[in-house]
Image (cartoon, rainbow, N blue to C red; front, side, top):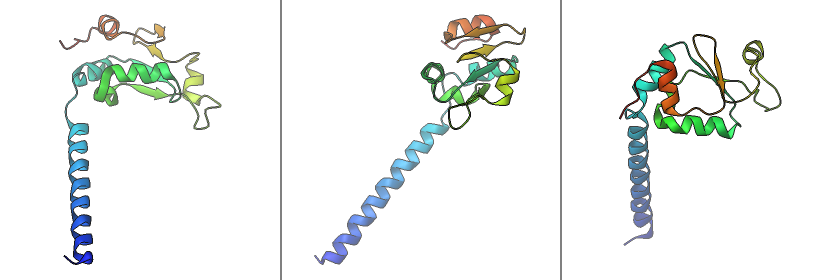
Length: 127
């Protein structure tokens, strides 16, 4: 077989393989998450989740929600250079991350379990 034809065949196989991988990745990202309704309910209750992109506890908190984290009422408090705090978080007097502020104006600093968030918000935690 001609090397040029073989190169084309290999190229096509690689492109198709990448395309299939991207397709399945997009499907997984768009699939409903286990906690979608729970996260949406939390957001509907007037809750705010303040955090910083560099905060490991904030990342762990988001990880508890898996792909449903995109529905959380998250507010980024860090400036892009990690050296400051955004004005919205300064005005809210956010001192630590994560901070959960509830509709009744109470706050909880630190990671919260899903069970505690369910109790505090009245949102149903999926089984």
